[in-house]
Length: 111
Image (tube, rainbow, N blue to C red; front, side, top):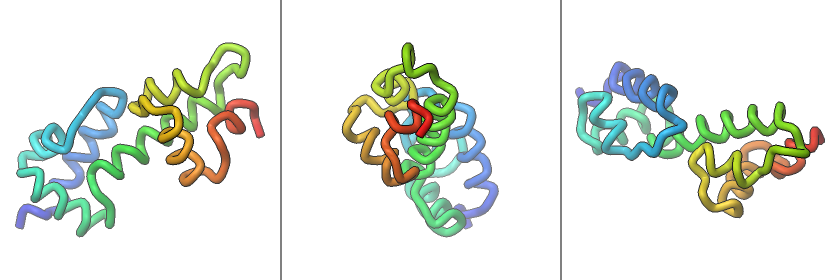
């Protein structure tokens, strides 16, 4: 059974350690020593999500932490989003609002 918890643990460790890098499902699967399909199945079975959705959540958490501690005078939402793998400011804002219930700008301003 390739949809094993160990597969997920290996992939999660890889994602957590490389979330600031451009990584694909193929990279994640390689790190977990399985095929991309087996990785998809393992994530669905054990985390009820996909590898890319998990990666997005990890990146959003990192961006959220950076926005909470950022200086509104020097930190920009666009730069933070881009640094954490969201090159489109509008897509970043949409994912962020869905996850946190506010805009990235509101978090940066301390609201």
